[in-house]
Structures are given as C-alpha cells and as structure tokens.
Image (tube, rainbow, N blue to C red; front, side):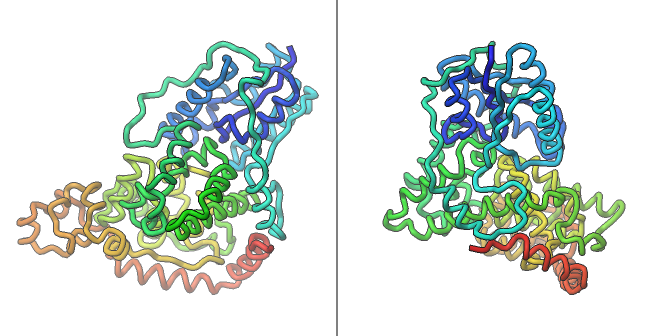
Amino acid sequence: MSIAVVWLKRDLRLQDHQPLYEAAATGLPVLLLYCFEPILLNDPHYSSRHWRFVHESLVDIQQRLPTRALYCSHLNALETFALLQQRFQIAAIYSHQEVGLANTFERDKGVANWCQQHNINWFESPYAAVIRGLSQRHHWDKHWQTVMRSTTFDVDVNGVNWCEVEEAQLMNIEASNEGFQRGGETSAWQVMDDFYHQRGKDYAYSLSSPQLSQRHCSRLSAHLAWGNLSLRQVYQTLLSHWQRPGWRRSLVALSARLHWHCHFIQKFESECRMEFEPVNRGYFDLPRAEGEQAKQYLVAWQQGQTGIPMVDACMRCLLATGYINFRMRAMLVSFLCHHLAVDWRSGVAHLAALFLDFEPGIHYSQFQMQAGVTGINTIRIYSPVKQGLEKDPDGEFVKKWCPELAELPAQIVHTPWQMTDMEQLFYGVKLGVDYPEPIVDLKVSYKAAQALLWQWRDKPKVKQEASRLLQRHVRLT
C-alpha cells in the first residue's frame, strides 16, 4: 500500500498544519508519525518534563483522530522510515522545517539522502515566517506580516483518508506533575481562551513580575515551542480582540513579543553555529572563571543555593514548574555570566532542560544576548537585589520559593546577608546553616563585570564582527 507520511516534530497539532493539509490533499492514506528519538532523549537540552509534555500532546492528537492513524517509534527517524518502507510503500513524506539543534539538522540531512536514494519526495513546509538559508533581512517584516495574516491550513480530520496502524506506542511517562502545564492542542486553546476571558487584561502591567506573570502572562510559550498552536493562530486570535476596550496596551505588548518570536529564531537559522560558540567571534577569548571555583559557582546556581534570594527563588521556581518570566530568565543568565563570570556555554543546556518552553532558536539567541557576547546589544548587568526590590517588593515570590526566608520582613528578605547576629537569631535564619552565605559580593562582581565588558566591546575584532552581524540580522522593511 502506498502512503503519505506526516512526520511530526515540534508541530504537535492537527489544525493550521500545512504538511497534514498537503498530505491529505493527495488522497493517499495518511500516517501520522512521531519518533521518540534516542538522539534527543539523550540530549542534555531535554529532560523528562519535555517528554511528558510531548506525550500529553500526542495523547490529545490520538483522542481526536477518528481512526488509529498515529504511529510512534522509539527509534531514530532514519531507522523508522526504513522500517515503514518495508511495511508500506512511502509515496511522500511531509513535515515542517525544524530550526533545531545541530543533531536534528544532521539527522535531516541523513533523511534527505535516504529519500533521494529511494526516490521518495520529502516536502518541507516553512516554520512560521522563518526563511531557510536567509543571508539578509530585506523586507523580512513584510514577509512576517504576510505569513501571519494568511489563511490557516485547516483540515477536516474526519475527511482524511487515514492509514490505520496498531495503537500508538507512546512512552511510559510518569503521571503529570500539577506544577507543570499540560501539553496538547486542546489544553493550548483552553489556555488562550482563558487569557482573553480575563487574566490577559493586566498582561502589560504584570509581565515583569515573577509572581504576577505566572497568571497574567499568556502562558502560551510551551504550546508554541511544541507546536500545539501555530504562531499564526495566536497572532490572528490576538487581532480578533484588537478593539477590546481597556486591552490595547496589553495587546500591543503581546503583539511585539510575537514579532520577536520569529526574529530570534531567524537569527539562529541564519547563524546556527551560536549553539557552540559566541555569535560575535571577538568574544572567543573573553576571560571566564575556571577550575574548581567555576564548578562550585555553577552548581550553586543550578541548585538555587547562591545565597542571593532572587536568583535562588527563580531557579527553584524553574525546577518545580518549568516556567519563569522573561525578565527573570535574563537575570539568571546575567548573574551566571556577569556576577559569577562563568562561561555561558556551561549553563545553556541546564536552563534549556528546565524551560518547558525550550525553543532552540530563541534560547541561544537570548542566552548570548544576555551573556553580553553579541557586540550589538545593550550590555545589561542585572542587579538581583534591585530586581527583587522592584519586582517583588513584598518578598512574596522569594518567600514562596525560599521558605527558609519566610519569616524575614520585606525590607531585608532580598539582602539577608545584611542581618546582624541578633537579627538572625530573632528571625530563626542562621546564614551558612539555614540559608547560604552569598557566593559573591554583588557590588564587587558588578564593577568587575562592567569594566571587563565595556573594555572588551571596544576591541577591533568585536567591532568588526558587530558590523557583520548588523548587516545580516537588522530587519529592513
């Protein structure tokens, strides 16, 4: 039997799905395929929280199909296609282009060679508004608008000629943790509907707060990262609410972030070596902490045991829920790379494994920007104390995730190292016992980082690379 295979990757949905739309239009029996690939299961960027989300997304797809047309493999993609070719005759493969890690790009090149050897057509649809192989940004914003406002690729799943197979061999996943968002197209639409029902009205006023953002941010990032929704669906839904009274500021703020989404992924697509090295080659020799001190700093940061409450609370929140808002993500990277002077490459996979919404293109573009190794972005050295005082003035967030500090008054919860011995006794918090002493002096580390980064930015190689990057990545209308 000749079939069309729709290869699902980070596009786990049934609507606005161009590969499924095109495969269904052929009239051939259509098989949905997802591979739990060992190359990704064993990759340090991913953890069980991601595969639980994928599992939940696939279960949602499976429950909404009229037949058993979802096939899950636990082999790498190339091995899976070889097995399917033995069982069926693959007429064509349909998928979205994946702007992913280097291992998935190498995998895709292998699949392309295999398809050529077996005379199988592989049709790849663009991911959102990202253009493969783009070397400049002329008219890119117009292209983004065209894609986002175009008709969605929707399919009547009951009208598809599905290829029925045995039950999907889903992974044996532990029960969902209540602290994590649930995956799936159905859940994604519920989250988006809830955002526009009420909680999104205060989005613009809450997005920088680690506590308020938990509720008032869209919370769609994980669903976008794994493709439960397309960016086009999210943008068009936003436009449908554009005239709502009292919502304009929040909708403008959210719209800007949807624009940035593809912008950063496009940067990664056009400069994917940033997975391994500074995008600005002038930062190759930037002095970084080394040896045992760097290891100790890294472990303390990873475990939320730095003695800096705002840093520790954010990391512990991530460990427990997989989510923290953008401002606090930037602070975590800044603290690691500036205050601790640890090489950004030492922490990039750790945060990826914690972010439920890990999106390679956004992650690497943002990580390097916050680490100050692009040469074209404003250097930001976040003060964790200032962020705490401004974004968590009552200490509510810190006290939730650092319960050992729960009895401290708001005026000292962000600087517990300033407590006297008498205060430590009074509040029942002994530094170095109940809560760590700070691993760095923030004032000293700030001055050192500031002097180094501004000095380095003036180096000829950094300026030369900055000019090249601007020519390649600045968007021209």
